Image (cartoon, rainbow, N blue to C red; front, side, top):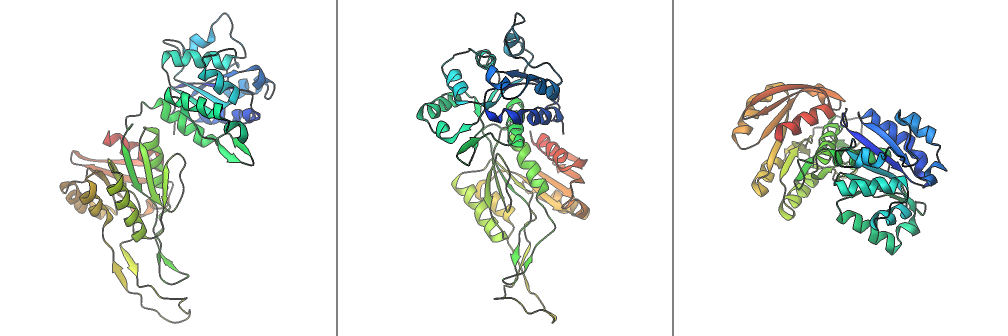
Length: 376
């Protein structure tokens, strides 16, 4: 999905060993549709050759400021760039940016970008002891106070390692989206629930959580504060881990009552029934009758608890009459899909609102984008 189509990203690389990851990062940005212009400090060029980034971006890497005033061309008023992404960013460069010093190509681009007020994303990478230095901590706080997006590193093996490529790309997408969901609290339930039958077996569905993940990441790109209640893990959002429908029910209502929710998306295949629980392991080899108890509808209780804008999902094309009833009952949008879409990477969906219905087909990411565009 070309989420960065038409955008120009200046990728400023500084002298961390993590500079070796920037060829992969440049390719990832370009696959999303971005035009990428590399800018390198002298220290970075000592770690990765400028030709490598020239190859990765398809444009000559900038290693010094010339009479063409490249920093103004890209990051000055009316400049070509939509985003300055400094990755990796060393403690030295963080300190210089915080103090307004521009004695390298990267810091000169940063000073120009901040003066223009364009989006800037900083991706720290260094040894953990340097990252914990009170001066570095203070400088990072100062950058954040200037609305610079600082991508937290991965703390591993005594190092504050550069964030993974997918996470950096997500921050870049969010920075240039215009963030129409900024300040909005989005709660999403996603994936399957697993209801225990005995100590070994569970009753579940074929849902994989692909749709919930796509919706969460798109909401993040659009600037929302996103919480996902599910059994998995999604980058850049708050994950609340649950297994059963009862746990999901409790977690969702807790968020609604304690924190408030602006938009609730019920994308999970929440269990409609729970089996009567047997202690131990049911012996195999003999017929077994299982009693199923109906479970309460989480979506109804969410509406009663905090009255958010609500998006519901219904499985089966024969559910359209019930979907229309939900719209009449206050749900903003109902997304209807057929069983083949469950667990698949792509599918056909019908997006229903009070204003009518439209059919959308494609990847779950494309469908998620259509859903959010219908809410904005």
